Image (cartoon, rainbow, N blue to C red; front, side):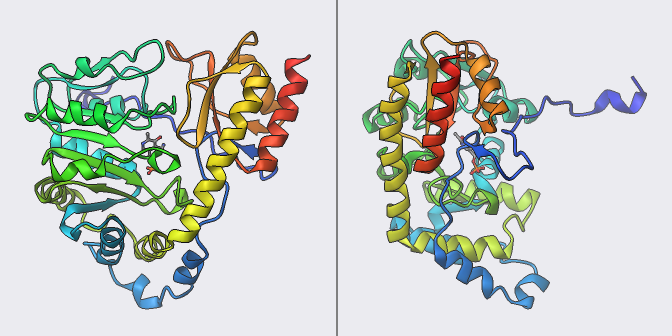
Length: 352
Ligand code: PMP
């Protein structure tokens, strides 16, 4: 190793799901929304003026923050926005997890958490989910440097009740508790009302899934004014202009179109409920999902084989070769016709 390499911040990076270049595939591997964003987003981007591009964007992203504030009935000072919820979560890790006591998150969860912990040198400990992939609240009632988990959890899709979230928040007045609600709009009950009661509770959401805007990179956090102020202090110490002008305008337009949002979310929920019946009939089992994906295991055929064969047939799903979950496939809910194509191919390859 060269001398200069000795002091490098070495990390094993997060591996995002594949974004294949081919067009003729059925892409059910990264939990994107199969429907386009609200038509109002195209209108917003059409009026992106030269000046909006020539000048630096608003560092406070006021247009977007105000639109989110109105939608969720909060003061703008209780909202933090960022470049996808990954950016928001990363800033939250940097801001709030600054203790020598380990932070806690589930063993089976979003695989970015341990990466951020490593890159920011935050000690962490994972708490095993139970046999049904549920959180064990008692595990989070020990001394800790912070707590984070998604609700519904990823990649399992399992939703915990508000009372479980409240129990954990109430038991941890000494640390910040972050609930990553990336998938909450697909049938879960948000713990947002609890932020009025718990100053240390941060709720993070995204435009990538329920608002069909993964490519625009918009995420946000909601919490007490204090939490948001601390996050902004860190953000403005790293990069003032995180959100570009187009994302600010488009995000504001999207969040205001409530009718379109409900319509597309309801469509995905209906397709998901149908998928549960269809996958069960094909011999899959899975924890009940309240997200836009199903985490399924086949009764007899290994996941690796199904994954490989689906890919040969140009259908992409996601699989992790990790303890406890290597026999599962995470299947994003697509349109009805994409799902029909999936069932047809599955039927063929499971009968081979
Ligand atoms: N949290 C969870 C649980 C996720 O699955 C994802 C999607 N990969 C994210 C956060 C980040 O999504 P985005 O940065 O697109 O908002």
